[in-house]
Image (tube, rainbow, N blue to C red):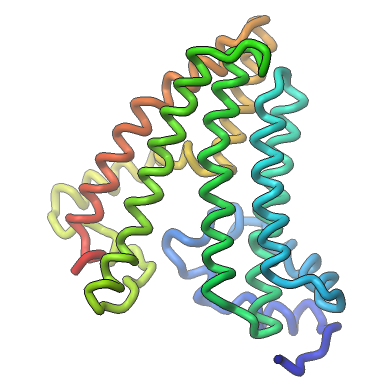
Length: 262
């Protein structure tokens, strides 16, 4: 157990819980974390330090926020879409704080990493289902759009599985974890490398990340309100099908063409 004071200054806290490698991670750190949430999170982390709440409990709250966001998003109207967006922002804040709390108390564990992954995967699988329910007009009219949302959700989970299986494959082969660096993730072939760089200009694959998903859902809700129907939500859901298919195949190709499995 760490003997660090439970009431450090924000500067002292940042020096310990936000090491440089946190911001250097290629894929594990969301752009919103770098842009603004890591600036805010130490203030909440500092409030949590004197309490008995554990990092895993904070992770549990993070997962709960994600599920609530999906539930709220399934309701019609702009206000629920705004609510889902705000809940995902709270989820992102808690996602920063659980790791910061663990690093300060020196309580990092495989269980914490596992819970963190489960929380994100459940959220990002539930959001397209919620969008499908919204596109069907609500819980009293479940039909084909909800089924389409379920299909997108399956693709999201398959994309997540592709990523996680890299670590599983390396562990079973007796290799260390692949570094979370751009150079490791980049395709070795020049053509694929250039194609990946071009697609990075318009990262459509991020449509399945909770922050971006709720921003898109809010945009669709605004279209719904203007049109007086569910046309915005339905159009977004239709667009997510080919995006999901391309991302699923492209991600698999990117993994095999990079150094992640070498």
